[in-house]
Length: 311
Image (cartoon, rainbow, N blue to C red; front, side):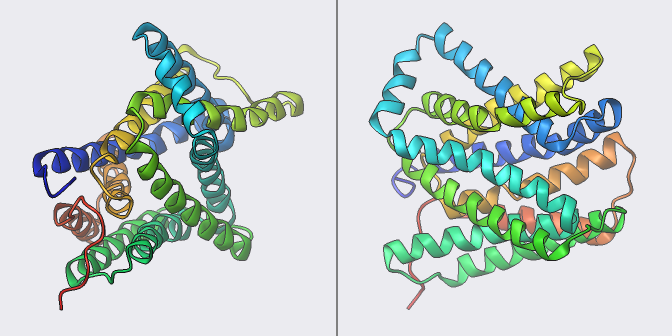
């Protein structure tokens, strides 16, 4: 598909990159909600997914796509649940990893492992070997991610209390992210993006709902305390979840899962740029070099599936 329609393939890659940019804004919003209202990362994630599901369900009803959502679930119920559950699971694993091992290691392991596993799965299924171009793209992207994450970790006091367990959770998060993206790629080929996003996000929201109940029962902060915080929470749900995953699944129609996992590495790049603009944080030269490496790797991506190594 990507070879026959290069413009559509490039558009799909841009849609995946746009999703990564939106995800990059989420970290700052989560930090603001934690500082203002004491909301934990898991509580914010649960609200984010629930609000996204409500927004998508409302849009599906207004746009008269309710039948498409129902048909998507009926056609492939197990795969829809797996993708929706995987989306919720890898977020929870990542947040838990950050608390236990620190943000730098958690980001490098979870985000860095995903494109490697996704590429390995695609080549194993196609019975091909990765070519020099793909290997160069992966190395450049991972090197850039390490530089950006190391810089972020230098400015953080959170080193983690149980690094061994945190590392295992980061590996599990990366593996779940890769699996979910590859499964989502197959599902996106046969399902309308709006219907797919609505169905999988609703599944994720139902799975994360117990965290909201737990916060309410234990007396932990579970709701935003000001209209401004509520607006931030709505932004998280509508922009960084509903819109971002809609862009991801639309892009996956013409972009392979391995290429998508590399393209979404623009997330830490956009997060670092936003921190510099909004918070006035200084961008160090390793962060700048890392950002350029990631952007160069994304620019060199081929959106389609795996290609055999040059003989």
